[in-house]
Image (cartoon, rainbow, N blue to C red; front, top):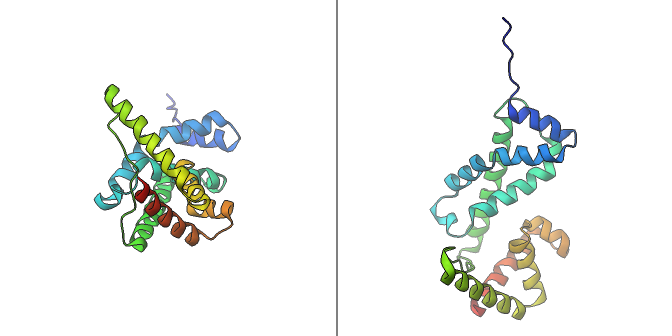
Length: 184
């Protein structure tokens, strides 16, 4: 009796995604979402966790993975997740470096508990306050915050759009967050 060996799901999805199958591409990243998010949460640490949302780190890593997907080579079943974890580590290291350079904690946007009608009203009130404060910021401050926190772009990507270096974008972001904090 001949035993058939099953090809691992990651390998099958990777081959299809490399061939241009968008559904397989989406499934490949979805297959590893929970483990990657768990890795982010485990690696963030208590200080950075107060400043950065786990999903933001994961989203940044997935953006880099999307950009570099054609360069990823499947070597074994764990290769894809290890690659994602390296990208996540780089995003976390960037976050640590960024906040260490600031030497002060940036303003955190208000968050509310997503349960019940009263929290729904609180969230709407917070969104309104943030929108009003954003309207009062200078154009550069508003644009950098929208690019970084609402569109989820990295400092490098935002810098390309604003014709500035990544370092200048990080400094501009810090000033914009400080100004937003005063307005809130």
